Length: 332
Ligand code: PBG
Image (cartoon, rainbow, N blue to C red; front, side):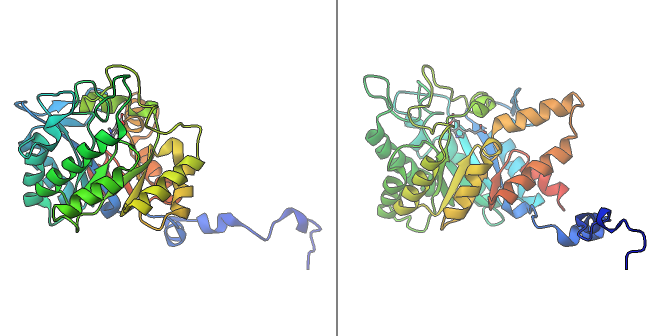
């Protein structure tokens, strides 16, 4: 019985009860980030003598084949679940010929990684043409400067076969061409790679947050931008359509990219998708946190783990992050 007459001021429901002490908080935590769900994007460059630091992404490098192998070992050692490999060729041309050259840099590096770490983590190959074309667009161009969708599909199928042949355990088309998943699936199946899964960059937005990546991968468009093939940040419905099409075409996993500014999209896709959903913490997100931390404006490690937790909470099962190795160590 209330003898104070103040009952109404003292709530019975007290959410803070469960926040009292680390043991209770650990017991009731809904979301966990695990090293095995992290994927490390990595860059390998042809024709360099040593790793080249990427200025807009402190701590990240364009690797030689050797330094790539060392960094991949460290990732595997830390328990990271996968690697997403990007190649930067010494020579670019209109059609991106180096991309499906069986002895192109990315194929050589895939062979190294498949042999070295292929049993402990999943070696994936980003499948696009922007790092390989002289104009920096994600496929060969029509006369008016637009990317020729269907010509690009033939190129992508050929690249997929070269990557799978070199040991890629998963291929990940990121060019946002219509029909790319179906074209790649057909190409892989015909070449005897029916077992190789496709992780489709299904909902990829035309984003300012790719800025630093363009230094890293040397794939900035020479003219125009990618709004003619990547999605408009204003649209959500379109993401679900892209995911449905990719799944119908045979995508084994789908990705949303970028992540932080698109967590609503991650959540919607996670709800609708019958296949695993990945999200990409892109270069600009990395650069923002690194830059703020360098100035002492933000607690770097907390920010890394908090953003990764938010990706998982939104529903992403795998997160691509340049911090994968470091985060995996922090999570031990
Ligand atoms: C190229 C590609 C891009 C990224 C991944 N693959 C850049 C782009 O579309 O312009 C961005 C990754 C990042 O910013 O970390 N198809």
